Amino acid sequence: MEANINGTYTVLEVARRSRVPRVIIASSNHAVGYFRRPDGLAPDYLFPMPDTYYGVSKAAGEALGSLYAHRYALDVICIRILSCAVRPTNLRMLSTWLSPDDAGRLFQATLSTDKPGYRVLWGVSNNSRNWFSLDEARKLGYEPQDDAEAYADELIAEYGEPDPLTQPDLAVVGGPYCSHDLDADRLEGGV
Image 1 (tube, rainbow, N blue to C red):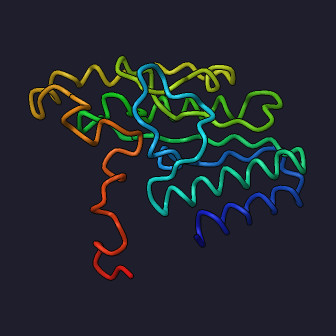
Image 2: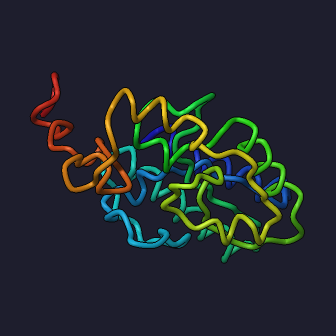
């Protein structure tokens, strides 16, 4: 709560008072983690369905961004960042990977576009097995170059073919974070 909710509020308020015209919010797929893997692509503006308290804090950050965009005409772009890593390390990341180079391209686009207003978009590379819309990101000038498919043979050899019917981590956007293993009463020191 302190970092992701109060911290986001503080940044937005300081930006408003200092007349900073734009804030980019690092949101997360965990703000919509319970969204079931779509047949097509998950749309950019999904209604919040957080999978954890972390996801709740990211949804709250997006809501704060909306407030500041609409009340104070601040440009706010919320990027629901997926799996940003040097390379994909599991089957899930064949769909959710955001390469560091594409992350740079995405942030460059969000910083250089003219008057975007309030936006919510996915932070993901141009993966062949992508589950997520790139429409909003492309409207801002993002053109991803990388594809996790370059690592598919190696990952499938290690883990087998991805199957959302038998692998629950592949059935919802939040993956393993939707598991009851993360319920407060199951975690050490939980309530």
